[in-house]
Amino acid sequence: MEIKFSKDNSVLEIKDNSLTSFGVIAFLIFVIFVNACIQIYMADSLNSRVIFWIFVLIVTAGGLYYLFSKKSFKKKFSLSEIDLITEKPIKKSYNGIIIKLKNGKTREIFGFSSQEELDGIKSQFIESGVHVDFK
Image (cartoon, rainbow, N blue to C red; front, side):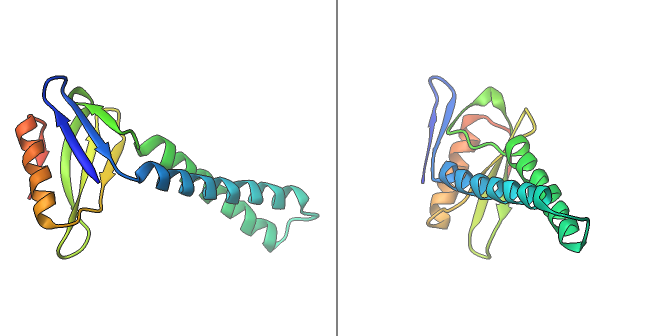
């Protein structure tokens, strides 16, 4: 993972594999959604199995809505798009960073190799002038 901040054009660039992970998760949820639609369409009568597939359909539709409306997987952000940067505890020794955007979406950054790398990233964010909330 690599995070760069360009001071001359006020752009934050994040290089990680979140876009690949997002694509895999979205594809799998979509496949389950399509499968639920087919199962409901092919059903003969309303029984417990159809009710299960209706439940799966509703849950996957909610999951797809959440992925596409609440999460951001962009690689470049201008400082004007960023509302707040916070820290999220993941394990006892490592934390992640969450970037909250002004449009309501969030971008999560995880996978830091050491606490020193995370502290260096935090100092970059503080120097950039973005509103940060690190504990």
